[in-house]
Image 1: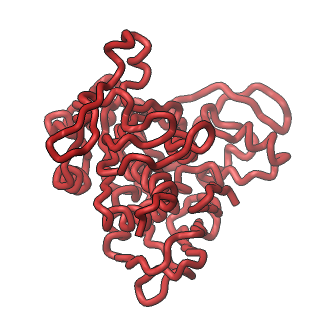
Image 2 (image 1 turned 30 degrees about the horizontal axis):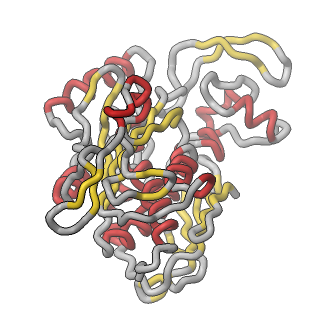
Length: 364
């Protein structure tokens, strides 16, 4: 299994895209937390395939069967195990890639790592299908956080060269986050929806694909969450984010923009507001200083590469015979993975924040 280990929450994800199923084991969740299965179903439906021209036509219900760790609707505190059956697989679509490695995929590196025994159907254990269990975990941890007033939201900040506006780094309301979750195409400026979809469809019709940027915000995280050096909030969020296939970059706050600033421009000045809270006048630090939350909204953006499975002919190798070949990929693939990755990024943030929150003295 592929695992994420922290002092509190641990995750282990198992299965392959075209195997019998996929699943997850979540350990060290706090006991006595009510789990709303309708909320799980809604949260996971945002990631599910088969939702329009920007998505693969593969159909999967993606509603997990909870095997352990929940009793009478509440967490027990013991390992929570969930299993998701794979039902709509077309493994024959991958018959021509048993030897031909796909550019941009982990076929070659997986073959080297596992001595050629890796399952390449649908990407196997490297597939984006493995994000479904991660979203399940994100729904569970998100419900626990929201009972404490902490909300996570994300949107499509960019597809190809088309940009949406960004979140206000000083904060967004709970209502704005909930509204965004219910959008089929989660952008802040709805006028960008049609333009982005049109760009994706052009790439699909040309046998190509597009990438983009997802922006995420976590509100109401109290100051003092996290640790310095290796156990920082940025570290944990980044580790989980890079567990999402196709993610190639992450930046917090002003991110790479700080390289063009003066110290006087980048520094976020502190002040005490009328409520007696310590806050900053700006939020270039993205809510994290020294690996520890400052009390300001946590803001980060991730870069998503174009889907590597494209129908254009590509040069590659026959890894068994070590010859140069040409490959045409068949099967059902997302021309742009960005829209479906939005709840996955939210999930990574939920899991990391809850894991650190459990060390907070006032966590109940």
